[in-house]
Image 1 (cartoon, chains in turn red, green, brown, yellow):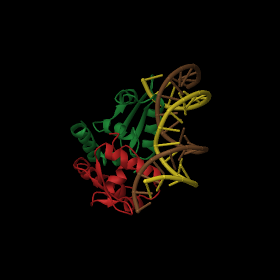
Image 2 (cartoon, rainbow over the protein chains, first blue to last red):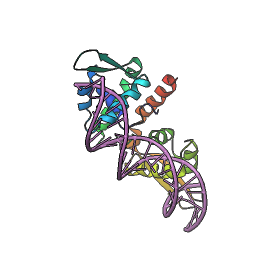
Image 3 (tube, protein in one colour):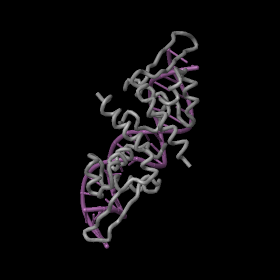
Image 4 (cartoon, rainbow over the protein chains, first blue to last red):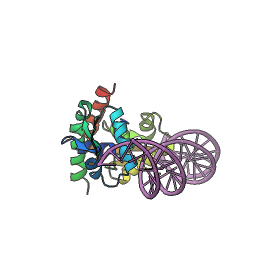
Length: 90
Length: 90
DNA sequence: CTGTATCCTAGATGATACTG
DNA sequence: CAGTATCATCTAGGATACAG
């Protein structure tokens, strides 16, 4: 489970549960993440096949991230983690 | 969710789902973990209230680890992660 | 807007040796 | 058997500047 054993991966995947998001929007949803880690992490997630990266050939550039089927198979776990963290956390 | 956002915490907790284990036994179930990381990690889990540490005043020393109530509240998530990792992983 | 390239530091982790 | 201490290493991660 190195696929999600990271500080940011679960968070990024979680925020994509409700649909595709533009790069900038997604990044803003993850307070504290640096530009570097954001790019690096989504690339790994893409490589692991958990999400897809769609580039629109327009200017200014537009890039959207979306969960892949495999990524969606984690939905249940991600939501439970979120629930656990909210309810239990404190 | 820094409580489980670690390379080893989920694994340790997972192996305790079926009951308390002696220190040595538990450690053997986690291939690759160093003695240092093992001790350090269980201490953090104890501090976070996810498991309890019971010391038996005998010789040779006997120490057992067991999930706390809070730790057990993660059972569902831990098992799903395991299932996901087995089924999907590959 | 999105992403890449550097530089740099703190903390994570391993190996080893040692104590009770 | 269980745990601690120390030393050395590695790498995750942030800050910044730049490119398409």
